[in-house]
Amino acid sequence: MNTSSTVFSKPWLRCVGSERVSTMLREEYWERFDQARAAIGFEYIRCHGLLCDELGVFRVDEWEGKKRVFLNFTYLDRIFDTMLEHEVRPFVELGFMPAALASGSQTIFWWKGNVTPPSDYGLWSELLVGLFSHWIARYGAEEVRRWPVEVWNEPNLEGFWQGASKENYFRLYESSVRAVKSVDPAIRVGGPATCGLPDDWVEDFLGFVRERGLPLDFFSRHLYAGQSPRARTPELFYQGLFEPTRPIEELRSVRKRIDAAGFPGLELHITEFNTSYNPLCPVHDTPLNAAYLARLLSESGDIVETLSYWTFCDLFEELDVPRSLFYGGFGLLAAHGIPKPTFHLFAFFAALGSEIVHRGPNCVATRRADGSLALVAWNPVLEKGERAPLEIELALPWKGGRALARRSRVHEGAGNPWGLWRAMGRPRFPDAATVEFLRQAAAPRLEVGALEDSGGALKLRLSLERNEVTLVEIMSFVDESPSYLGLDDSLIDGY
Image (cartoon, rainbow, N blue to C red; front, side):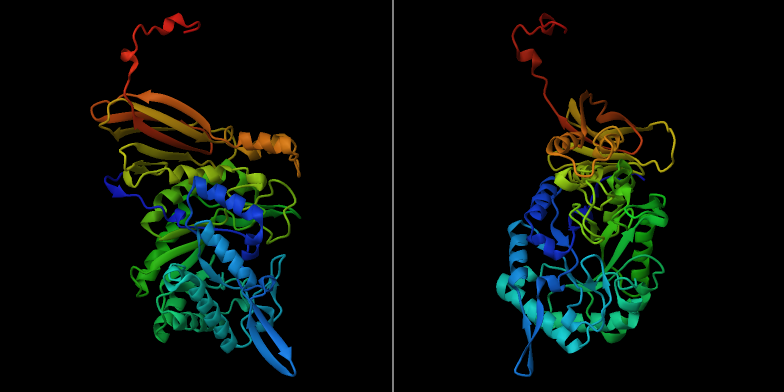
């Protein structure tokens, strides 16, 4: 597909996922986030565990035979203050259930988030009214209205919602949206944050919302590209991937179903996406992960408002404390702030302009506001064995005379710290010198060359290695060599 003068949207800059809310109390968390934000520019963070007991928000005190609900904001205030200090906002996820309000004992993850419905929906509403009233008092209504609010996480999966009960989730959504809107009708609330198939929740949830006359400001869903697992070990999860076009087709299908259900134009937010859905899958650490997701980043802006990568770093403890430097974690950044290939994928796409001058299945080229060009190209290879490089030839519109092209490359042999780590014998807990070596190996390979304007176009030929993602930035320059008196490079030895 080729397009001209088309806006290039970047929904993957809007939000990024992370480990549970309580990890925001750690200094390491913000070191990694600032590193990611500086290179990419995320606007929101989404994570689980807002109402889990380790933050102590919902407490029931008993004194002289009477019970009192107490909402404790000691940790939440510290966390949300820090978030805003780092110039990022929360994409609020309501969950999981405080033990004192839970109807059962079912939990998920190493840190035991309770996934049962509230035992008392009146108290659940009281909790939310108190929470949002406190936030408005502390941060102001104008600020809080900028925080999207998502009710729960993946209620269509039994692990995340007891029995995966639609009836119970629909009741939770109604109770939640009414409580939040009673504080301020302008706060934006959505759901159902489902994941995977079967996906009959789309029409059923939207039908329930319409039937009950409930507010719904956006529809949210998750998107993963992993097939059935190939193998599991005590420490790793091996999973194949669908073809790279599958996630895009799935997004288009959901968009059509939402419109057909009577909600045309309703915002669609993908609040989690990645290749594998398991945080112990080695594919996340590889160049393939980056090359595979490139086309999704290229085309998703035509379909969704948010495409939130899960997650920005490997500070992640859902399945216990990580046991090695690379362990298949979701993160863009490994431990010690070592960038993975997918980190560079996002940084490359963040460098693109806002006007599309060319888009195809393996490349998107854009014009920036200053007239320079920037393009990203990719070559995902799922098959094993040798394969010839992918050749791409482009003629890009240009009126700036001579041009300088700067190319940054990531593939199996460049910007691939996981590959070096494997070759080093996979050290679980490397010393400082080894960490620095790996950090240096994570840098993309840089190439620079001149291009000539040929009739108002720049002809560019790219050869992409296996699982390569490449960024090419093109800017005009003026040759000032003739202004140097007596210039003669032949007087330099070797030239």
